[in-house]
Image (cartoon, rainbow, N blue to C red; front, side, top):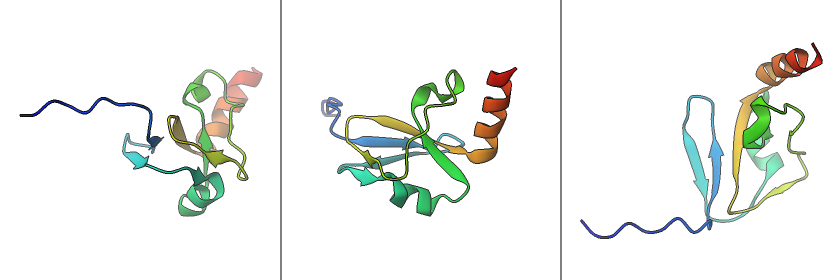
Length: 84
């Protein structure tokens, strides 16, 4: 088996509910991802500690980052818990 290629941050990773990871080698518009995943939002990985970190639809998701695709109902519950 040959040497493994080192992860150099040249990819964009989108983690779906259930753990599936979608990989992109070029920047992608958040609106494009949201159109493919209705009733979901794109968030930073720390969404479960800070549910206010939702990505705007007009944002460009750049390589070298990881984002979560989270159902809107989950975000709603997290925001309710943060308010209590």
